[in-house]
Image 1 (spheres, helix red, strand yellow):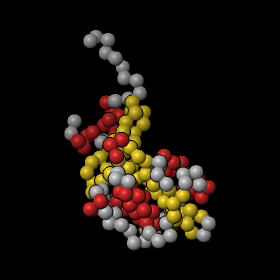
Image 2: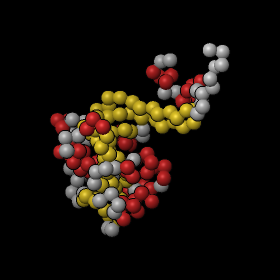
Image 3: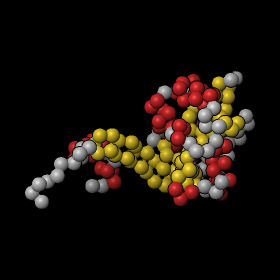
Image 4: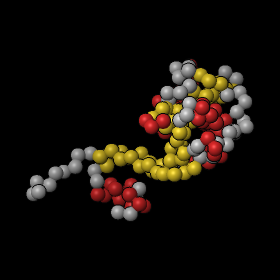
Length: 173
């Protein structure tokens, strides 16, 4: 199989008992020298993971988008922006093996397109770099990829996760 055939979900389903697919997604990485911090970062605050405002953002956004963002799984503080009392954007990261910081970003649907993702993500990236971690950004959707590139991330890989069902065993072998 070629690289393109490996990420062709229909082709995978034709030859394997695929139960679930996550991806394909692009993987972006950033070193300190390539970081382009956002200038819109004023007003970003750090919140503990269990903060009620953060929980309200997660509830407002919906299960699928929250899952895609990975924000529920962060191990860093949450870097947030508020409009009034409402948390409208948040970012953080989960520490992974080999000193990788897997970034997570989420913006309330009614506040998208205002560079809020860039502002909160910039704060989370700066925190990860200060902790001597390698920021990683997994992006399936173009708007997320655009934010990563705006912060200086470089696309260096791809990811496709497949959960398989039972594979029949050939009894003649």
